[in-house]
Length: 96
Image 1 (cartoon, helix red, strand yellow):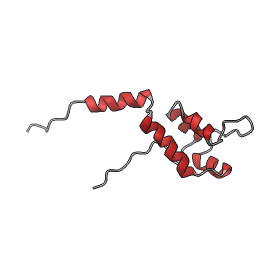
Image 2 (cartoon, helix red, strand yellow; image 1 turned 90 degrees about the vertical axis):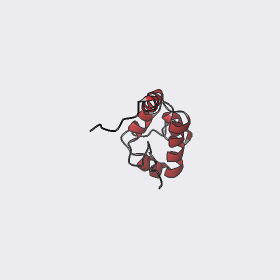
Image 3 (cartoon, helix red, strand yellow; image 1 turned 45 degrees about the horizontal axis):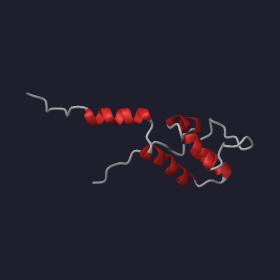
Image 4 (tube, rainbow, N blue to C red; image 1 turned 180 degrees about the vertical axis):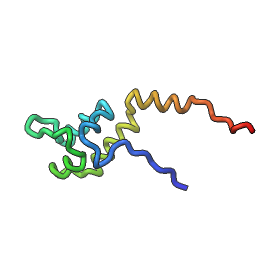
């Protein structure tokens, strides 16, 4: 059975929320020429999909790169959460 994959970013996510997910997310948007220049500002309330449509960027490629950030360079808060989950003791079956 296939395990459901967890995604951190989605097309309906506001840009501000995406930027807050990872300290380097702004660099990714800038690399796609989305808000990295003074003349191409992106409204923080716009969704990733709206921004991609407005600037002609392939949204699937942008999402793939953003997800790669989380996999290859997870933010410290995520690393702490993951480590705590791995170190948590396994639950024992209820005694009855």
